[in-house]
Figure 1 (cartoon, rainbow, N blue to C red):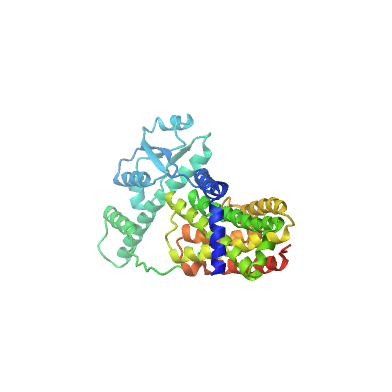
Figure 2: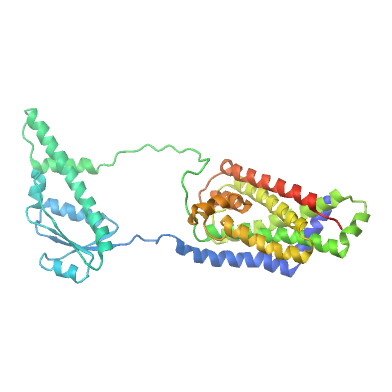
Amino acid sequence: MKLLTIALTYLKQTFASRSVLLFSVLMPMVFTAVLGVAMQGLGPPDEPPRWTLLLADEDRSPQSALLRRRLEADPTLQVVAVPAADLPGQVEANEAPAGLVVPAGFGAALLEGRPVELRFYRAAGRLLDAQAVEAATRAALSALEGSAQSAALARQVSERLGLPALAPASTFEQARALWETEAPLEVRAEAVTRLKGSEIPLGAEQSSPGMLVMFVLFVTFGGGTTLLAEREQGTLRRLLVMPLGKATLIGGKLLGIYLSALVQMSLMVGFGRVLGVNWGQAPGALAAMLLAYGFAATALGILVAALARTSAQADALSTVVVMVLASLGGAWWPIEIVPPWMQSLAQALPTYWGMRGFQNIVVRGLGLGAVLPEAGVLLAFGAAFLAVGLWRFRWE
């Protein structure tokens, strides 16, 4: 009961301060919103790029019409019909990155299995775009060639078996229909427990957990600095005169710091949801990560307080430690975009495991079983930090 009273007193005093509310609540929210907008630019464009393909159809056959439909179905192409005589000049003038001329006899050659030469023009000043258009054009042609080859094979088999001759046009049409038929797939849903592959978080999905991970360290480090200030002012010495005992006193202070961390993280989660971040995909997983990371952050705050000699020194040390842990641990930017050696180094930091667990929930939609390893690592970090911090902490 005494331990809880000390913890609640610390919690009340902490959040009664306007400076704490400004630095621990308002500022993290501002950073989350601003960085969320800025990080949207890291992702791919909402719409795929589209390139203009000038198309001159001199054949006017069902097969050339089919080729045009295939080209128009490609989301990266905008097909514009032009006369064959005008096409080379327009491409040369960079009005389009590429142009395709389908010669007369294309359809007949395709049905009979004969080679046919299509003329493809590239703009000299837009070679990269022209290469992309050429790749899409070759894909459309490959589908037609596959249908033609299937039809030719069917006619050869029919001939060898002595069956009635098959008409090239009807055989090609049947082969094309079969080629385009989508085979039904049976999909079985299973629970996902571990991530295979990596989705890079963008926008608020990166900034919301990132600022949560960083600013909760400021809260817990501030709690450790408060203990040093009380030691310097003699408050701890006077409290020890009361029938509390060192274990109850330090336990109550630690519990108060831990509860303040949970309050701050809960506010950050709520604000993230306002920004559209899906924090609620796995409530059990989220609770486990908040409890584990809050414990690790609290223990690290006590460790920093134990290593510092004065509260001023602890303040300066806290700022440096938080910035290093946040930047290297992936709180400022997606850890997936940094070099491999930095990703390996980050695994030695609690912030990395906090970000990994939170992003498994937010970005990848994983559940409790998936984040248990991250929560376990954070608990191990916390136990080590707490043991060293309590061992090195000086009451006077």
